Amino acid sequence: MVYNPIKVDLEALRATVSAAQREAGWGETRWYETSVEDPGEGVTREALDDGADMVMAAGGDGTIRAVAEALRGTGVPIGLLPSGTGNLLARNLDLTLDNVEESVRNAFSGADRKIDLGVADIERADGSRNKHVFLVMAGLGLDAKMIANTSDKLKERVGWLAYVDAIIRSLRDSNALRMRFTLDDNPPRTLRAHTILIGNCGSLPANILLLPDAAVDDGEFDIVALRPEGLLGWAQIWVKIVWENGVLRRSQVGRKIMGVTKEVRTLRYMKGRELIVRLERAEDFELDGDSFGDARAVKLTVDPLALTVRIPPEAA
Image (cartoon, rainbow, N blue to C red; front, side, top):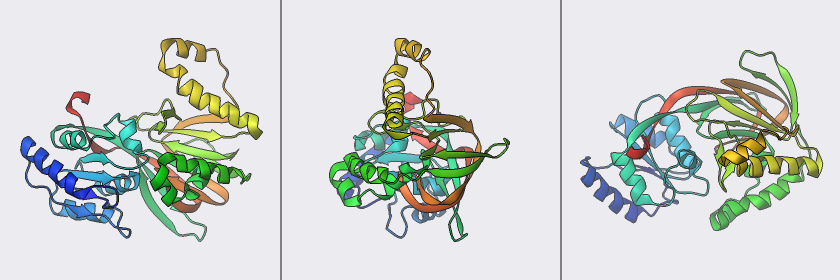
């Protein structure tokens, strides 16, 4: 068990795990605490060195992402015990979000499912580089600025409502991204956009289906560039994402209606296995809802089926 002590009720979690491991016939669970200095990757590698057959991750999206980074390509499954405001991967896999007992039982008695990981190779303004994985989404532009502007204290108190304040502050910045990008083997192209999002999954909190065709195991990214011009452009984006993707797409009649609607210029969708982006200037960058500082260039690639996730046996 790799756990974030700030996000879990440790005494209750230990009791739940103890009961579930006995019921499922597992041995004793070892416990590894994350810290500010090590959000989960280091202690997960320690757990692997100690012979872990499975690593349960209890915490927010940052903890889940750090544990997944260490488990990449090992074949050792991750059991998700979501505890935070986003719970992005659990949402996209239709896992339980608010029932710790059920999540723990699924980890011990569930089935394995392999999913893709995204890998981000980040070049900073000073020329330094580092590499991280992501499970759900990477973003440049307004999306990343919003996350960078979000108050952690406010998020702890009001959850996703904290992003409303951050959105308002971020919208005051009218600077659009200017970039040169290469998608797979296609020739380089230029693009001007407020935000570009690269998704391994498609759903966000509040039932927002941002990338409706994204699949977590298809070996491809789904990419969207937001290019609004004024309030009308933002309104078009809102209608497309919230009404069409979130409502119409979910019924047969709605899909027929969508068949006669026009695509809007404010949204540009793309698919690919590798995306290289070079920006005119360093911009805020985020992975799975956490700010990762600024980036002057990023190379994003899919690592197909690189992570094994425990899911409910009936979902297999």
